[in-house]
Length: 299
Image (cartoon, rainbow, N blue to C red):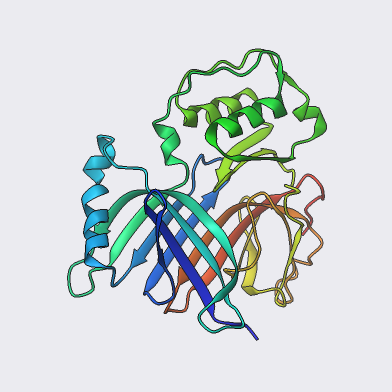
């Protein structure tokens, strides 16, 4: 039997001062994660916020302030999970988003719903790099150097030894921290994708699977909802939101209804979309996966 679902939105309004909003509030969350994007996006709607907190967020995060670079960098994190043995308390919450608030807006009374738009690692858009990677460094060494600059954990498990050992003679790029990622990817154009997934810097050879998480078998007994289908670029399916799925992970999809999904093809996840609420029906993760170089895709 499934236990009650739990959402926890944490806003670090001041250093060390974290405001937490959970299932006691009417919350809606949409998170979009895509490979090849330098940051993920998150949209959060919260009702019945404290007036002082609401006014503080509204005064500091307008579109105009964002354009002129006057918004502060306030971290925000989203966790999901299930209630534990003690009612009202959650066990094993899993983080699905970590980033910074971009803008805030509010709906008219009586609802007065605060909408928060956030992005991962947006602070990197304004930080300038004045350091240089060591000369004649390997690809994996430069990736770790960039991850260290950005304060991220490098995930290089989807790199083949041949690509990881290639030498970059002179990686000297004086630009924003965000541009470091794009320029590094351009050096390996056509072979490697580089993207940020919350607190990870993922360097992934096209078609390879990240070994940070085991291959997941998605079917009707492991939380899949509805019928999977093929897209122009691979496959898509929907599952319960707290299914342990991650960017770059391997996945096998099996459907009793659609014979095109026998559960034998290993694909790689390249897009995740979370649709969450505390008081309505949606509690979904929409997963998109492409062909993996490890197993030939057959229909």
